[in-house]
Image (cartoon, rainbow, N blue to C red; front, side, top):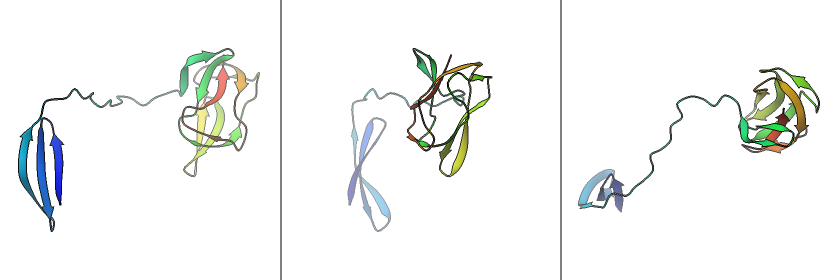
Length: 125
């Protein structure tokens, strides 16, 4: 079996047979501008969106899962770090915490609902 492998600015035609690889041909290729991979330097602290809804700042789901409990309702005053929602993902219960003090202006989800990464859960003002 012959494979073509590109590494940096070279293409290699490699023949693989019975667990052994032999380079058949090497070709120079013009450099392409490929964006460098983005590596996070620190974990994301609060899963909030940059867009503010009419009723406050949306708290988004950090991962796909199922809502197993909602600890607050509209109008509830919350403190930073208080548990808002319990999200079950990969057989683990994950607490979604308030990123700041405020008042819950909207609850977008219901108990038992399935959510995807980035879905709005609650908004706080």
